[in-house]
Image 1 (cartoon, rainbow, N blue to C red):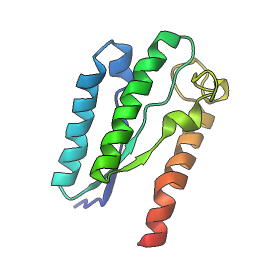
Image 2 (spheres, rainbow, N blue to C red):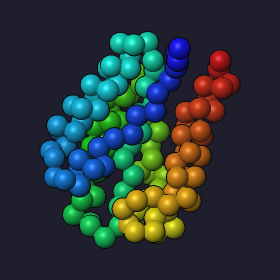
Image 3 (cartoon, rainbow, N blue to C red):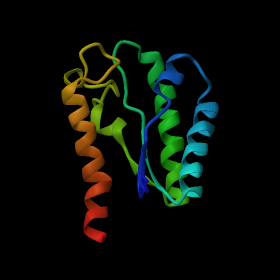
Image 4 (tube, rainbow, N blue to C red):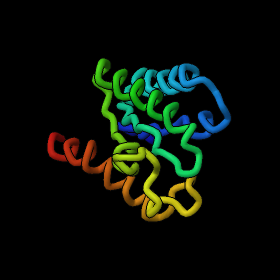
Length: 129
């Protein structure tokens, strides 16, 4: 019997790529956060990392990520900002060292995400529990 205390929720990247509206994607994420809470599991929300090679897609990611951060702040949900940790601060593109194809993370990219989730969320949880 699994009784998790936390669940990491990262979603929306593929939906953005397929052109689904940001509002619809965010509603789906909201439902996931709420479902976790209803089951007494604390969600750890993650922002969607950036991309390389399709600059037109970056503003939608930024809008979705802003919605995630704002909602989580209002609801007291833990959030890890993976976008900021993996993108170039000037161009907002995914840093090339984090991906081999501009879309999918490579080993270094996943390591950066793991470090970010640990530093932004898990470390504090370990210190307070």
